[in-house]
Length: 387
Image (tube, rainbow, N blue to C red; front, side, top):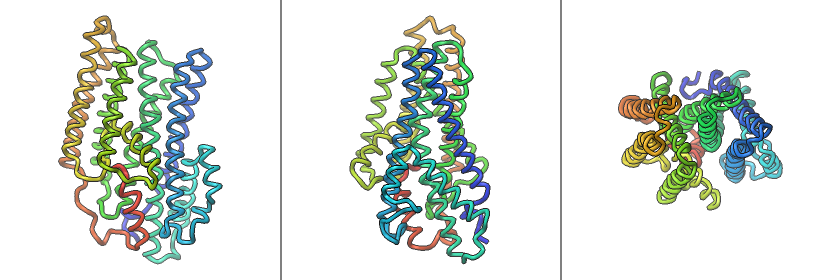
């Protein structure tokens, strides 16, 4: 029997299926809301809502296709040559991704492979082959979780910001707006935890993230900081949309420049690398990630110092420049959420990294043996964003 920490369990398989349902529902609610705006004659909100869905879909298809192409050329992952990967030829890969089905295809293969391993069993395999089968599942799950992370911050996070702003302006919200905001929050939370756990499990030299309090504290730290940041953006939107556009553009440029200066080497082509750095820059406008996989204590402190200034000053700035909102219920409630969320986020951040962050490397006995697994762990995945 394999140790539990290197097994892709039935619970993980069920959570993968649940993640697929959450992804579909999140997209469905956003598309439905876009159609509702269109029927109501609110063309700007309809275009914005739908454009975020398209951007998230487009970027995930680009990287999904690029990673499949990399796997086709990898002699260890695809030893039979560049004919196909997971039964798909180059032509089929192009068609699948042009149809926007890259993530669904990855879900299908992961669920299908996982079903064979965890439900039908691997009794005919020896211990080494079982380790390799489970490790391949974690590698597939990690690729998928990275794409979901891109989608969460390119689609769900800005979507949540726009819907909060619309509700603030109108003073009321429809059922579809509430559904869109709720599932956007769920999608962001799910993407963060799933990505962190899958990535740490797929890298043999790093200890897996423990369940229980470490996962809960990490999630609370991320949700508190991200939600307060989004709410501060929403208040600045009330002041003037151009203010937020300028602020986000500056933060995006700083994040992209930082990725460029760190000389990230995530992609196999220069064009994809430039797109990747742009995506990382946008993610950094909402939350911090370790871009290069190295010690970034100074960078994290600087980032959250700037984040705290933006979050804390946005309610004060709106109150000074728009005095009439000072007594508005929405302003008082959102300002309270921003202040409390920022403080709690910083408390959870310090608590997590001082007490709960897995620091010890995984014991040699727990590592997955075999040159193919080492190649997968030290290749694309070793260059993923480090939480």
